[in-house]
Image (cartoon, rainbow, N blue to C red):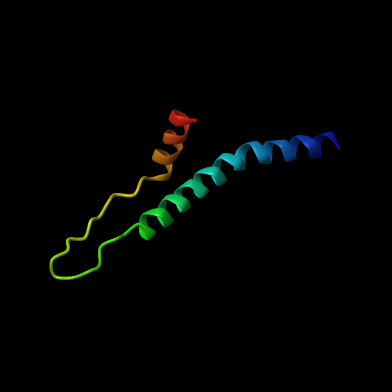
Length: 65
């Protein structure tokens, strides 16, 4: 029973940060795609922003929270 509690605790402690980063990256991606106010046309220039990597998102979380 103690082994099960330790295994469950280890699983939560290891996987929770991964899911937080995944959620942040998904939310950031949906925000950037929904905030596009310009319509495609001959006079508009597409703006391509480099999406942050998983490590960059994780480091940003450590710095801000």
